[in-house]
Image (cartoon, rainbow, N blue to C red; front, side, top):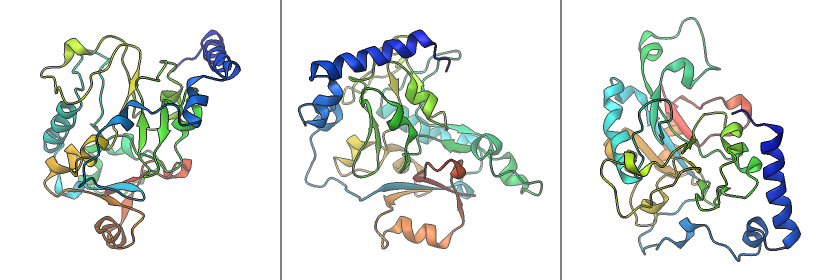
Amino acid sequence: MKTTRRDFLKVAGVTALGMAAGAGPALAYSKGAYLPHTEHMDTGHDHLAAKRWGMVIDTRAFHGEADYAPLIEACHKEHNVPTIPGTQDVKWLWTGGFHATFPHNHQEFLAERAHHAAYPLLCNHCDNPPCVRVCPTQATFKREDGIVMMDMHRCIGCRFCMAGCPYGSRSFNFQDPRPFIAEENLAYPTRMKGVVEKCTFCTERLAEGKMPACVEASEGKIVFGDLGDPDSEIRHILAENFTLRRKPDLGTSPSVFYII
């Protein structure tokens, strides 16, 4: 993203006005006077909870890029993700090659299967998320269970979070996405022009006691669970398998793991 000095001053001015007034969105949130729209979701008695949610993707169980299509379709249908032709597409879950997924894990003797395979990409819900630090309005925030959220109502479209994310996991609505939604899911809100969005680990489904849509569609090839529980299934899988995380040397501590 190219941020001009004018853009920066505009954002800084908005933030300063809010602080000066003593009633800006960031300050109001800190006092509990504001709740992100996602916090207004009804939480059922069977809701799923964790100390820190994480995901393990067994890429050995996927035999080609087409195998990820049902996962992407399930995610995008659940969240009204539009299909916009050209370079302004919005994506929550997509695929990439090995070198784009793990640019810091190159080695000349990489197995051919791993070299040519496709890998699912999404928000890594980092334990140390740079996108949260750079957001001037707290539209991006981290929940206590580790999920990095995006409150579209508070997003001012500055795109600092996109610049801060080293994984390219966020999309910006350069135009109204609603005309590009093939079949709208009335149970999930659509977005508008000028806001950033991304994967949320399906918090709305967790609140109803359901697994994320992509996990459900994977039929066991993706495991979602509590990284904070040493007895959880995901912790056992991590203990028994060698896994990779994306760009670990950046210190963001991603919560998405790949079995290669």
